[in-house]
Image 1 (cartoon, rainbow, N blue to C red):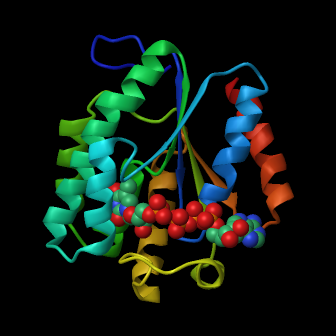
Image 2 (image 1 turned 45 degrees about the horizontal axis):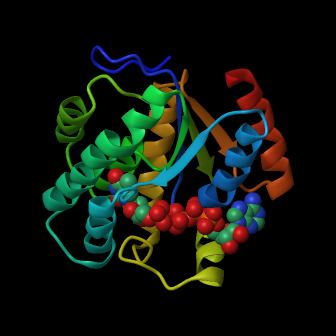
Length: 210
Ligand SMILES: Nc1ncnc2c1ncn2[C@@H]1O[C@H](COP(=O)(O)OP(=O)(O)OP(=O)(O)O)[C@@H](O)[C@H]1O
Ligand SMILES: Cc1cn([C@H]2C[C@H](O)[C@@H](COP(=O)(O)O)O2)c(=O)[nH]c1=O
């Protein structure tokens, strides 16, 4: 059970991670329906974003050039608001909170991809959510050529999605490093599988958490 500082958090917190185009957003709806069908109240959200202020920060983060440390700080500013307004109130009510990305994305993108020292990221994490970690992190893992093909087929690319292959290799590497560091909360999903095969795997993982 996730614990806040002195606050009993009764719900469960599940995060969805992966490089852009890995397929995580595709599966959030499935997980929400799976849990709702089993009587859970589900809150689905995303980062950066998830609150009115967070969505404004998202626009800046996805479309404006900025210093790397500004980018990291704004990611955590959006997160602080998201935790205060959405994540902790939801968990305190006993809801299941699903977030399309959380702090692992900052490690993957700002540290892995862009090279910001991990110690700075750890300091921000310790400041912004010292007592909160996901109960489960689903890491959708794909080779970046597959992710790129999926993105190119579907949308206009934002600032991150326009990055070069080497950037995404480093993001993916950092995600996999964190999955190895925290095996108790990460489940790595081979996202080259078909959508039904992934949903079957997700069902088994979720059954264990119910
Ligand atoms: N397992 C899969 N097989 C084939 N296509 C998939 C699979 N998973 C997702 N897709 C397709 O790939 C595209 C990107 O998926 P999705 O938007 O879920 O990725 P994402 O990881 O959330 O990307 P981003 O982080 O950039 O939002 C979508 O068109 C989706 O239908
Ligand atoms: C939370 C978070 C996100 N990012 C990046 C990762 C993605 O490229 C975008 C968000 O877009 P999505 O389509 O909603 O996945 O933001 C990041 O660099 N650092 C973070 O902490």
